[in-house]
Amino acid sequence: MQINTDNMNTSTLRSLQFKHKENATDWYRSLLKHVKDEDTSIEGMVSKVCPPGNLEHQKVKAIFNWICHNIEYDLDALKNTELRSTDPVEIFKRRKGVCSGYSCLFAEMCRVAGLECVQITGGCGENKIKGKSRHRWNAVRINKEWKLLDPTWAAGYVNRDRTKFFFKYDEKYFLTDPKVFNEDHFPDDSKWTLLPETNQVARGA
Image 1 (spheres, rainbow, N blue to C red):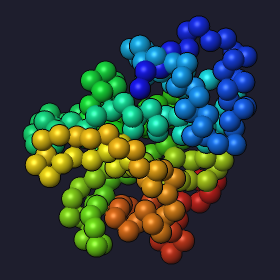
Image 2: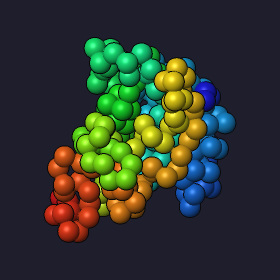
Image 3: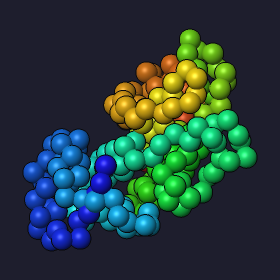
């Protein structure tokens, strides 16, 4: 997806924002029509996808969508751990990364946007096979409440031969209900399940 608001004035950006403030997805799609992916810095891109005055959930949605539609899963790094990076600047420039790359870039873009976000490390897998595979995802605080999301799994999938990545956005992993999210995500620190029975992070913490 290509994004550029250089020729857009503040009133145009705000009209887009408020026109779609009830639906963050529609708002984001409208913004994309006016933006080109020419920025060479994280700060520049965040300023484009998160124009002044928008709400926290809009910022989170815009950042999440941009990453899921522009960062490709790095198959070389999947096969060779020495190629894996947790440098958000490198991930942003290369437009590639594994789960740690997606997670660190999302956290950094949130930080630039003034959002509180953490990276969570743990196991993942189906049928509650805890720790079958190591993984990293995020939690972000929106209106003083922590929410779970996974930009890696939401971005697409790798074929069985691990030779090709396919972009296929999956809304399931955006601000997912903790009970659903924890069916295949098992954080090392149980408080990040965000379930009441596991010492959930306090709303105002």
